Image 1 (spheres, rainbow, N blue to C red):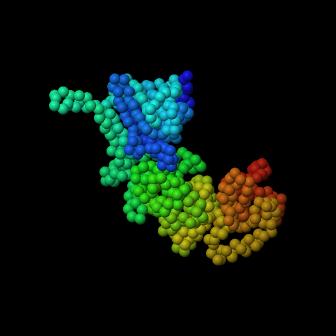
Image 2: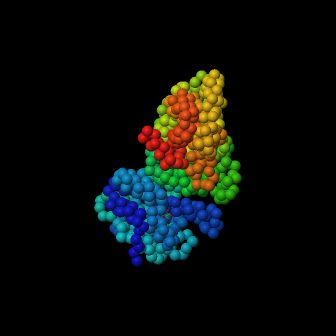
Image 3: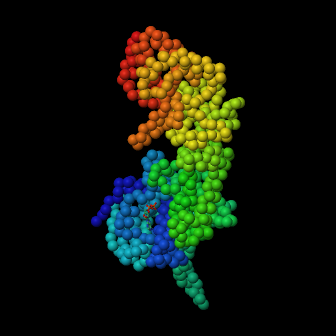
Length: 622
Ligand code: ADP
């Protein structure tokens, strides 16, 4: 009975079948890569399961071309697939890369990007009009045949197979462009180009004319040739590797369609000997900021994969790094538990962390534009690093941070900020809001800029928590421009303000009575230039933090200690005085509107919008 492909798969399949992509040869890269993964899996299992007997030297991938029947066969003696797995794996899109590819295709309608993606098994339909997969799982006597001629579905039935593993038979499409996939020279060329580093031999049976001994006659002789050099890219001499070789490897191995922004290839000899090949992606994977994302590097022991994602090799704040480590200092059949305590692994991890940090610093210094691209993708992760370590990683990470600067109008480092400090400036000023534009319009920012101070604009919700953990940089304390503790006045100005506030005591008492628990104080301020009012906060919880924390899905709600400040130099302060004497009822209304204004400016909700709207209308109608 024919079964239908899942909807997603069907679309991808259609794209493949009707592909006019010229680089169809990549199907072989995909099938060889699957075969190699399958062998890896079996080999990996055999390390911990004694019942599985695998001779390393027997592991291989075999190609066979049959010109008469126009078939190309790719076989492996890897882990194999059960009936259910054939159904699962080949009936649906397995990998995120393929899904991403499909999305990109639909968006851009750009056929050229096929080669950049790992599109997987389905790419065989670019060259074949029928695909047969015969597979026997390593722990089973039974074998199954999966067969499909494309869009109209697939069939699975029981079959026979002598040995474990998977054999894929491609019935090549008619046409000259497909003929070459039956030629040894072409297959050799494709394997060299895309799969040379595969660590198992990719062999092929070829026939040669061989001269018989003591005779003039020739006979056909079969010979098995190995097509790949099996030297993994990271074991090659750096000087012989081109940037595009690294990128091809990166795309293929780590399923990214974009080039990495930075590639680190380093070999270390000493207390611990290892080679690391690391890539910093140019963009965050779609699942990066979710729980599903798994950090880690591939771990090899002398070229043999022993772990696919070894998370011990990367700190959380560098979890975006992709790559691998190959070392001879770890035993092959080390268990996961033992590995965690392995001293060598710890050493390698520490070295790698330093190396990545250095690389980021270099990028920041030498290629600012690239670094900003990096920071936009992963800066948040560095900030989490500082926050989650309660500041323990402060020294390591603080110089990698970038913040938008009010005076430079671009992203700056803390070091750069310090280099521009005004004489006697002993604080680093920052302001928070949703966007740069919104922060720019905060009344509290205006005055401080007027005085010539640079202000860092924090627009991400972790930012202010990070500032609290950092506490200070180069001996200068961080301070929020909306903080009650901001202190810009001279002693005389302070004294004058104090007296004025004293004189307003009774007026403010009435106003406080109107606003009740909403605020903890009202006072006159010098903080504002043109604006009539603003809110400031005192204590550990700022207004921005109140917003962030109350948006979290917990029952615990926090409230900043809020103070309503009124611009001493604004007409409104005199008006309040008049109202207090003549019309206290009006003063209450004014108070409500002023407070609502201050909240709106801060991006905070107002509790009684209808009342405020009515009040404003009342004044408009006057
Ligand atoms: P991907 O390889 O990215 O997961 P594919 O569509 O190429 O996506 O393959 C889907 C799945 O089918 C693989 O994840 C793997 O589990 C299985 N598979 C493919 N080829 C083989 C093979 N030669 N041996 C064993 N399993 C295979």
